[in-house]
Length: 324
Image 1 (cartoon, rainbow, N blue to C red):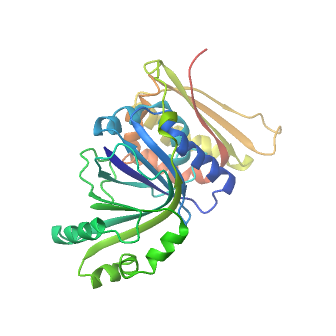
Image 2 (cartoon, one colour):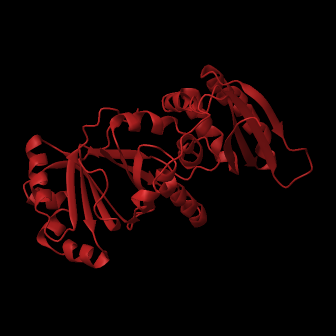
């Protein structure tokens, strides 16, 4: 089993209603994606960061079906892909650890997650000893990020320490204890004789879906050709520039990934207060987008498009379609 936390810092202009919509989409993932269990998401209590937790039954489910599933590519990626008009996030990353537990023993409460980069094996062992004697913590789990599959961004931390509290009162009591104070800062760990190169802490309420309701349906159209459509709403004066950047930067990237432009439309002149540009590219299948997505991080053209074109986009949609 793999415990995974997706850390999703929000953009400053992310509207509360859209953030809640995003959280609802993440929470529902265990009802759509086979092999993904116990999906919960919420806002960190100390920052504008969404914390998404889940468990994968094995590494094959994590690196395989999850990556190509329509719910991941469609609903979830709408909010995290930087070329999406609906993107709410920036500088996202994951933290993982292997666990023997199929499901989480405590189904609701407050999760405090420590992402640690231990300076040595001895430091990691010292933290593991602390986690094994969790006075004041309802559930404590510690593990190394030794998951084989790693994205292009690499590993965010060497170890993950999950602390679970039944309610905020128990959390506050723990934070006033010797270990609670020490395990809340780099300086505190140093006073315990433990050296970390970095420490990040996120605290979030959680409520897990009952196991019996986590029953994803099988996908039956995985190899069906699909259309990828981005509709961007833009100030009238910026439409020409946006189209120019699409043609110079985005279309060549898509074509290089085997996804040619099918059509592009723009709203008629003098008809609206803002412009709208709709572009549709052909895909061999929805699953084929997974390989395309993996190439975006290092592609200079795609990144230049995000840098120069996306600031022009006020709103819009990103959708995948099949013919009917």
